[in-house]
Length: 340
Image (cartoon, rainbow, N blue to C red; front, side):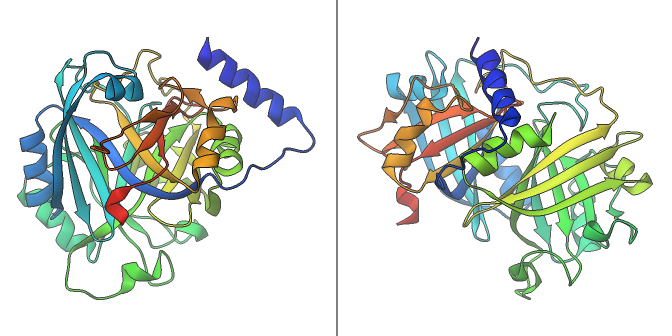
Protein backbone atom coordinates (compact mmCIF):
# COMPACT_ATOMS: atom_id res chain seq x y z
CA UNK A 1 0.00 0.00 0.00
CA UNK A 2 2.80 2.45 0.90
CA UNK A 3 4.63 1.81 -2.40
CA UNK A 4 1.39 2.42 -4.32
CA UNK A 5 0.81 5.69 -2.42
CA UNK A 6 4.35 6.83 -3.22
CA UNK A 7 3.96 6.16 -6.95
CA UNK A 8 0.59 7.95 -6.97
CA UNK A 9 2.05 11.04 -5.26
CA UNK A 10 5.02 11.26 -7.63
CA UNK A 11 2.78 10.82 -10.68
CA UNK A 12 0.54 13.61 -9.44
CA UNK A 13 3.50 15.94 -8.87
CA UNK A 14 4.83 15.27 -12.36
CA UNK A 15 1.48 16.39 -13.75
CA UNK A 16 1.70 19.80 -12.07
CA UNK A 17 2.87 22.75 -14.14
CA UNK A 18 4.79 24.06 -11.16
CA UNK A 19 6.33 22.01 -8.39
CA UNK A 20 7.32 23.61 -5.10
CA UNK A 21 10.96 22.82 -4.35
CA UNK A 22 11.52 22.06 -0.68
CA UNK A 23 14.32 23.61 1.35
CA UNK A 24 17.54 21.65 1.27
CA UNK A 25 16.92 18.75 3.64
CA UNK A 26 20.23 16.95 3.10
CA UNK A 27 23.53 18.72 3.71
CA UNK A 28 25.76 15.67 3.32
CA UNK A 29 25.81 12.07 2.18
CA UNK A 30 27.62 10.73 5.23
CA UNK A 31 28.10 7.00 4.69
CA UNK A 32 27.36 4.29 2.16
CA UNK A 33 26.18 1.18 4.01
CA UNK A 34 25.83 -2.46 2.99
CA UNK A 35 24.82 -5.68 4.69
CA UNK A 36 27.43 -8.44 4.86
CA UNK A 37 27.28 -12.08 5.94
CA UNK A 38 30.66 -12.24 7.74
CA UNK A 39 31.83 -8.91 9.13
CA UNK A 40 35.38 -10.00 9.90
CA UNK A 41 35.84 -11.34 6.36
CA UNK A 42 34.45 -8.14 4.83
CA UNK A 43 36.61 -5.88 7.02
CA UNK A 44 39.60 -7.90 5.86
CA UNK A 45 38.61 -7.51 2.20
CA UNK A 46 38.02 -3.77 2.34
CA UNK A 47 41.16 -3.11 4.39
CA UNK A 48 43.61 -5.51 2.76
CA UNK A 49 42.45 -5.26 -0.86
CA UNK A 50 41.15 -1.68 -1.07
CA UNK A 51 43.11 -0.06 1.84
CA UNK A 52 40.08 1.17 3.81
CA UNK A 53 40.82 1.94 7.46
CA UNK A 54 38.62 0.65 10.28
CA UNK A 55 37.38 3.60 12.36
CA UNK A 56 34.90 2.09 14.81
CA UNK A 57 32.87 -0.99 15.71
CA UNK A 58 29.65 -1.31 17.69
CA UNK A 59 27.01 -3.92 18.46
CA UNK A 60 23.40 -2.75 18.59
CA UNK A 61 20.06 -4.33 19.54
CA UNK A 62 16.77 -3.18 21.00
CA UNK A 63 13.43 -1.73 19.98
CA UNK A 64 14.84 1.62 18.77
CA UNK A 65 17.07 -0.08 16.21
CA UNK A 66 14.32 -2.54 15.23
CA UNK A 67 11.94 0.34 14.47
CA UNK A 68 14.62 2.32 12.67
CA UNK A 69 15.44 -0.57 10.30
CA UNK A 70 11.92 -2.03 10.19
CA UNK A 71 13.17 -5.43 11.29
CA UNK A 72 11.98 -7.17 14.46
CA UNK A 73 14.50 -8.98 16.67
CA UNK A 74 17.54 -7.36 15.08
CA UNK A 75 21.00 -7.58 16.64
CA UNK A 76 23.85 -6.25 14.51
CA UNK A 77 27.56 -5.61 14.43
CA UNK A 78 28.48 -2.43 12.56
CA UNK A 79 31.93 -1.36 11.44
CA UNK A 80 32.64 2.10 10.05
CA UNK A 81 35.57 2.31 7.61
CA UNK A 82 37.16 5.21 5.80
CA UNK A 83 38.99 5.73 2.52
CA UNK A 84 40.27 9.25 1.98
CA UNK A 85 37.51 11.62 3.08
CA UNK A 86 34.64 9.15 2.58
CA UNK A 87 33.16 6.48 4.85
CA UNK A 88 31.26 3.20 4.57
CA UNK A 89 29.39 1.11 7.12
CA UNK A 90 29.42 -2.69 7.02
CA UNK A 91 26.57 -4.35 8.95
CA UNK A 92 26.35 -8.02 9.89
CA UNK A 93 23.02 -9.25 11.21
CA UNK A 94 23.68 -11.68 14.04
CA UNK A 95 19.90 -12.10 14.13
CA UNK A 96 17.82 -12.58 12.13
CA UNK A 97 19.83 -13.77 9.14
CA UNK A 98 18.66 -12.61 5.71
CA UNK A 99 18.83 -13.96 2.17
CA UNK A 100 22.01 -14.37 0.11
CA UNK A 101 22.85 -12.24 -2.91
CA UNK A 102 20.97 -13.60 -5.98
CA UNK A 103 23.46 -15.58 -8.06
CA UNK A 104 21.91 -14.41 -11.33
CA UNK A 105 22.04 -10.67 -10.55
CA UNK A 106 22.77 -8.33 -13.45
CA UNK A 107 23.80 -4.69 -13.54
CA UNK A 108 20.38 -3.58 -14.82
CA UNK A 109 18.38 -5.23 -12.03
CA UNK A 110 16.49 -2.83 -9.78
CA UNK A 111 18.48 -3.73 -6.66
CA UNK A 112 21.78 -2.87 -8.36
CA UNK A 113 23.89 -0.42 -6.41
CA UNK A 114 27.62 0.13 -6.29
CA UNK A 115 30.16 2.52 -4.89
CA UNK A 116 32.75 4.06 -7.16
CA UNK A 117 36.28 4.03 -5.76
CA UNK A 118 38.68 6.46 -7.43
CA UNK A 119 42.15 5.21 -8.28
CA UNK A 120 45.27 7.12 -9.26
CA UNK A 121 46.25 4.56 -11.92
CA UNK A 122 43.83 2.11 -13.54
CA UNK A 123 46.39 -0.44 -14.73
CA UNK A 124 48.05 -0.72 -11.32
CA UNK A 125 44.71 -0.94 -9.51
CA UNK A 126 43.41 -3.58 -11.91
CA UNK A 127 46.54 -5.71 -11.50
CA UNK A 128 46.20 -5.45 -7.73
CA UNK A 129 42.61 -6.70 -7.90
CA UNK A 130 43.68 -9.53 -10.19
CA UNK A 131 46.40 -10.54 -7.74
CA UNK A 132 43.77 -10.66 -4.96
CA UNK A 133 41.54 -12.85 -7.17
CA UNK A 134 38.46 -10.64 -6.94
CA UNK A 135 35.31 -11.73 -8.73
CA UNK A 136 34.87 -9.92 -12.06
CA UNK A 137 31.64 -8.14 -12.97
CA UNK A 138 33.08 -6.42 -16.09
CA UNK A 139 35.08 -8.29 -18.72
CA UNK A 140 37.98 -5.95 -17.91
CA UNK A 141 38.76 -2.22 -17.54
CA UNK A 142 37.00 -0.06 -20.13
CA UNK A 143 37.94 3.38 -21.45
CA UNK A 144 34.81 5.24 -22.46
CA UNK A 145 35.13 6.63 -26.00
CA UNK A 146 35.60 10.24 -27.06
CA UNK A 147 32.22 10.10 -28.84
CA UNK A 148 30.52 10.29 -25.42
CA UNK A 149 31.75 13.78 -24.60
CA UNK A 150 30.62 13.91 -20.96
CA UNK A 151 32.37 10.60 -20.19
CA UNK A 152 35.24 10.64 -22.70
CA UNK A 153 38.46 9.19 -21.32
CA UNK A 154 37.00 7.84 -18.08
CA UNK A 155 38.33 4.37 -17.25
CA UNK A 156 36.22 1.99 -15.17
CA UNK A 157 36.00 -1.62 -14.02
CA UNK A 158 33.26 -3.46 -12.09
CA UNK A 159 34.06 -6.24 -9.62
CA UNK A 160 32.41 -7.81 -6.58
CA UNK A 161 33.15 -8.17 -2.88
CA UNK A 162 32.96 -11.52 -1.01
CA UNK A 163 29.16 -11.26 -0.64
CA UNK A 164 28.53 -10.30 -4.27
CA UNK A 165 28.08 -6.53 -3.84
CA UNK A 166 29.08 -4.63 -6.96
CA UNK A 167 32.03 -2.26 -6.67
CA UNK A 168 33.73 -0.03 -9.22
CA UNK A 169 37.20 1.39 -9.61
CA UNK A 170 37.22 4.58 -11.65
CA UNK A 171 39.95 6.81 -13.05
CA UNK A 172 39.23 10.32 -14.29
CA UNK A 173 41.18 12.01 -17.10
CA UNK A 174 42.65 15.45 -16.20
CA UNK A 175 39.60 17.38 -17.45
CA UNK A 176 37.01 15.44 -15.43
CA UNK A 177 36.15 14.68 -11.83
CA UNK A 178 36.67 16.53 -8.58
CA UNK A 179 39.93 18.44 -8.34
CA UNK A 180 41.00 16.39 -5.33
CA UNK A 181 41.16 13.23 -7.44
CA UNK A 182 44.06 14.77 -9.37
CA UNK A 183 46.17 15.74 -6.35
CA UNK A 184 49.23 13.51 -6.11
CA UNK A 185 49.47 11.82 -2.71
CA UNK A 186 51.23 8.56 -3.52
CA UNK A 187 48.14 6.45 -2.87
CA UNK A 188 46.48 4.05 -5.29
CA UNK A 189 42.93 4.02 -3.85
CA UNK A 190 41.89 7.61 -3.16
CA UNK A 191 38.27 7.69 -1.95
CA UNK A 192 34.65 7.26 -3.00
CA UNK A 193 33.20 9.53 -5.67
CA UNK A 194 29.61 8.28 -5.69
CA UNK A 195 27.15 5.46 -5.20
CA UNK A 196 25.26 4.45 -8.34
CA UNK A 197 21.71 3.06 -8.33
CA UNK A 198 19.50 1.66 -11.07
CA UNK A 199 16.25 3.60 -11.52
CA UNK A 200 13.24 3.02 -13.74
CA UNK A 201 12.43 6.66 -14.51
CA UNK A 202 14.97 9.42 -13.98
CA UNK A 203 12.34 12.13 -13.63
CA UNK A 204 10.67 10.40 -10.68
CA UNK A 205 14.03 9.95 -8.99
CA UNK A 206 14.87 13.61 -9.54
CA UNK A 207 11.69 14.62 -7.72
CA UNK A 208 12.89 12.61 -4.75
CA UNK A 209 16.63 13.41 -4.66
CA UNK A 210 16.67 16.91 -6.17
CA UNK A 211 13.30 18.44 -5.31
CA UNK A 212 12.65 16.81 -1.95
CA UNK A 213 16.12 16.17 -0.49
CA UNK A 214 17.90 19.10 -2.14
CA UNK A 215 20.62 17.39 -4.18
CA UNK A 216 21.96 19.34 -7.16
CA UNK A 217 22.38 17.92 -10.66
CA UNK A 218 26.13 17.87 -11.30
CA UNK A 219 26.24 16.16 -14.68
CA UNK A 220 24.29 14.19 -17.28
CA UNK A 221 25.30 11.74 -19.96
CA UNK A 222 23.89 9.11 -22.29
CA UNK A 223 26.33 6.19 -22.47
CA UNK A 224 26.28 3.38 -25.01
CA UNK A 225 28.57 1.29 -27.18
CA UNK A 226 30.71 -1.79 -26.75
CA UNK A 227 32.75 -0.25 -23.91
CA UNK A 228 29.64 0.46 -21.84
CA UNK A 229 28.23 -2.99 -22.63
CA UNK A 230 31.42 -4.69 -21.41
CA UNK A 231 31.66 -2.45 -18.35
CA UNK A 232 28.13 -3.31 -17.20
CA UNK A 233 28.22 -6.79 -18.75
CA UNK A 234 24.80 -6.12 -20.28
CA UNK A 235 24.47 -6.58 -24.05
CA UNK A 236 22.88 -3.58 -25.74
CA UNK A 237 23.28 -1.36 -22.67
CA UNK A 238 22.30 2.24 -23.29
CA UNK A 239 22.07 4.33 -20.12
CA UNK A 240 20.86 7.74 -19.14
CA UNK A 241 23.20 8.74 -16.31
CA UNK A 242 22.51 11.64 -13.96
CA UNK A 243 24.99 12.69 -11.28
CA UNK A 244 23.66 14.34 -8.12
CA UNK A 245 25.54 16.06 -5.28
CA UNK A 246 24.73 17.37 -1.83
CA UNK A 247 26.87 20.12 -0.30
CA UNK A 248 29.48 17.54 0.74
CA UNK A 249 30.17 13.82 0.69
CA UNK A 250 29.94 11.35 -2.19
CA UNK A 251 27.37 11.83 -4.91
CA UNK A 252 24.41 9.72 -6.01
CA UNK A 253 24.41 8.55 -9.63
CA UNK A 254 21.12 7.58 -11.28
CA UNK A 255 21.41 4.81 -13.90
CA UNK A 256 18.35 4.50 -16.12
CA UNK A 257 18.64 1.69 -18.66
CA UNK A 258 17.04 2.97 -21.85
CA UNK A 259 17.89 -0.47 -23.27
CA UNK A 260 17.50 -3.24 -22.40
CA UNK A 261 14.42 -2.74 -20.22
CA UNK A 262 14.33 -6.30 -18.87
CA UNK A 263 15.95 -5.61 -15.51
CA UNK A 264 14.00 -7.00 -12.55
CA UNK A 265 12.50 -4.67 -9.96
CA UNK A 266 13.60 -4.40 -6.35
CA UNK A 267 11.81 -7.17 -4.41
CA UNK A 268 8.91 -5.72 -2.45
CA UNK A 269 9.93 -7.83 0.56
CA UNK A 270 13.58 -6.67 0.62
CA UNK A 271 14.78 -6.19 4.20
CA UNK A 272 17.86 -4.74 5.87
CA UNK A 273 19.30 -8.19 6.64
CA UNK A 274 19.23 -9.33 2.99
CA UNK A 275 22.61 -9.19 1.26
CA UNK A 276 21.27 -7.08 -1.62
CA UNK A 277 20.66 -4.35 0.95
CA UNK A 278 22.45 -1.00 0.68
CA UNK A 279 21.59 2.19 2.51
CA UNK A 280 22.65 5.78 2.01
CA UNK A 281 22.96 7.64 5.31
CA UNK A 282 22.42 11.36 4.86
CA UNK A 283 22.70 14.22 7.33
CA UNK A 284 19.74 16.59 7.60
CA UNK A 285 20.43 20.31 7.57
CA UNK A 286 18.25 20.97 10.63
CA UNK A 287 15.99 19.08 13.00
CA UNK A 288 13.01 21.02 11.58
CA UNK A 289 13.53 19.71 8.06
CA UNK A 290 13.99 16.18 9.36
CA UNK A 291 10.68 16.48 11.20
CA UNK A 292 8.93 17.55 7.97
CA UNK A 293 9.81 14.37 6.07
CA UNK A 294 7.18 11.93 7.42
CA UNK A 295 4.44 14.10 5.93
CA UNK A 296 5.91 14.11 2.42
CA UNK A 297 4.14 11.66 0.14
CA UNK A 298 7.30 10.95 -1.86
CA UNK A 299 9.06 9.30 1.08
CA UNK A 300 8.06 5.64 1.57
CA UNK A 301 8.84 5.23 5.26
CA UNK A 302 10.44 2.11 6.73
CA UNK A 303 10.70 3.44 10.28
CA UNK A 304 7.47 4.71 11.86
CA UNK A 305 8.53 8.35 11.86
CA UNK A 306 11.58 9.79 13.60
CA UNK A 307 13.40 7.39 15.95
CA UNK A 308 15.43 8.77 18.87
CA UNK A 309 18.66 7.19 20.11
CA UNK A 310 19.39 8.79 23.50
CA UNK A 311 22.76 7.03 23.82
CA UNK A 312 23.72 7.88 20.22
CA UNK A 313 25.33 4.45 19.86
CA UNK A 314 24.99 4.74 16.08
CA UNK A 315 26.64 8.17 16.03
CA UNK A 316 23.45 10.24 15.83
CA UNK A 317 20.55 11.18 18.12
CA UNK A 318 17.59 11.08 15.72
CA UNK A 319 16.87 9.56 12.35
CA UNK A 320 14.40 7.87 10.06
CA UNK A 321 14.64 5.46 7.16
CA UNK A 322 12.65 5.12 3.96
CA UNK A 323 12.78 4.15 0.31
CA UNK A 324 13.17 6.15 -2.86
CA UNK A 325 10.75 5.57 -5.79
CA UNK A 326 12.64 2.41 -6.83
CA UNK A 327 12.99 0.93 -3.34
CA UNK A 328 16.59 1.96 -2.59
CA UNK A 329 17.00 2.73 1.11
CA UNK A 330 17.81 6.21 2.38
CA UNK A 331 18.45 7.01 6.04
CA UNK A 332 18.32 10.63 7.15
CA UNK A 333 19.81 11.60 10.50
CA UNK A 334 19.73 14.93 12.29
CA UNK A 335 23.26 14.89 13.63
CA UNK A 336 26.33 12.74 13.16
CA UNK A 337 28.68 12.87 16.11
CA UNK A 338 31.54 11.37 14.12
CA UNK A 339 31.81 14.66 12.25
CA UNK A 340 32.40 16.70 15.40
